[in-house]
View 1 (cartoon, rainbow, N blue to C red):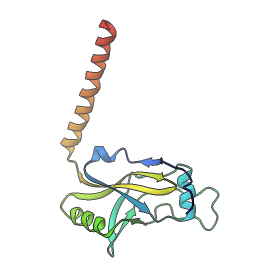
View 2 (view 1 turned 30 degrees about the vertical axis):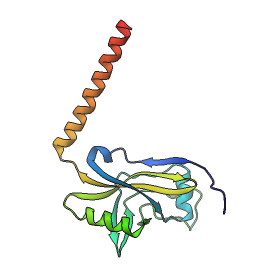
View 3 (view 1 turned 90 degrees about the horizontal axis):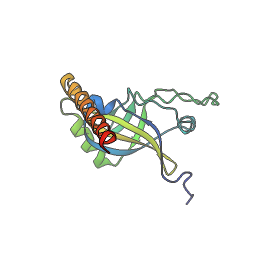
Length: 160
């Protein structure tokens, strides 16, 4: 068996907007079926998960809307930047995710794309879309937490 190229986990892209736009209910790590030029492009750290989502076709899960730019040194073998990519999951995982995603307001979105021991992996999440007031609430909580931390550090500087 060959030795992995890079032990550990190397992050390529993360979907920061996802946690703001959705309530994350469940996360799963999935493998990705990629072409050679896609892997080379990812190794250069180029990808965008912002518009990505997973859909079911013929009992399989596919990742759509994920942008992996064309490889700069690629020739006619280059890939389409937004093509449909197959996710590698166990049958039970696929069935469970699809069943939950069919409920109203649920979708499957990618959270992060990374290399784990040399293999491309994507962390997908079962998510429920947030309403506008939920987004405002999240922003307010983040702002309040920041202000509290600032006040505490200022207090410590003054009295510390």
